[in-house]
Length: 328
Image 1 (cartoon, rainbow, N blue to C red):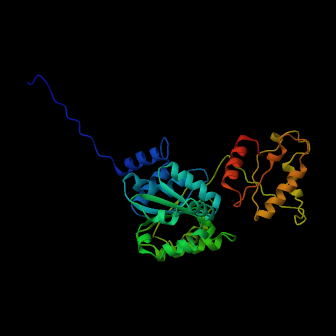
Image 2 (cartoon, helix red, strand yellow):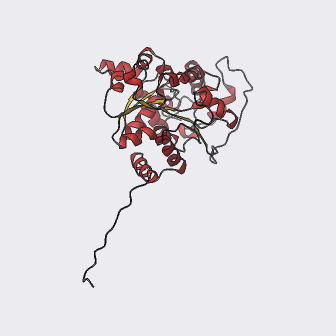
Image 3 (spheres, helix red, strand yellow):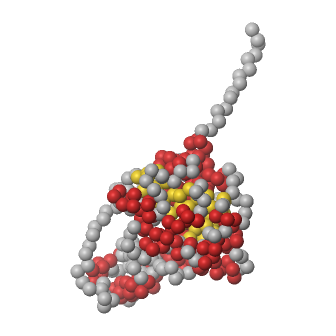
């Protein structure tokens, strides 16, 4: 019998799921992926289209960026297009993608103008490179002349490997975003058949899901429809119907937001109001501001507007002030 024994340890190769879990959790700085994130990331990595319906705040952005992040980890090349409804979301999602290691271009009229003033050409930067890069834009920007021209060039379209569309329900929801979202169906004509589409929504009703997918170019049986709970036990919906006219610039039905006996900023519960137009938002701010006592400390910071015309510096400061409680 030998006086010594040699023990051989054979390491097992990672499974695709183990690799994806390791790469995406590290990239996104998560302890672990949620089960639905891992499931759908694997589907996208297999070049399958996905329509994900999951509650706000559950991490659908990981799914929208999964294909690009996985390919970047393999040092592959390609272009990802992420479509969101507003300019503010363009900048927010671009920041998230950048933190996750992607070369990202936030493409809107402001960023394009600023880049050109600095001697850069963002559309050229999106086309060129041996890496994975992501262009984040609104449907409206996708229809502008520069993007329309790119979508006619093989050098660009052949590199577009992923199209991710957030707030997909807007394609079927009457309003200012619908026309832009419905125009996205034409991407299926212009881009290669190999392009992988990921749709995401937190509010798509079950009865509408198939119609939403169809309006964005995905046919039944040609994509994975993944619906998860959209319930948020910490949220409560209380419909309130206006009882008074608002055409005069007075909004009596929301005057309760500013307490009659207000003594300081914290007396106002942190509140977000959405308005259809910038003008209406200004009217809301003016009305609510007029309900506050004139001697409230920091009065000029308590009620503010946030619009697509605000500068990035203003929006960043407002976000900071709202989170700190300075703005209510």
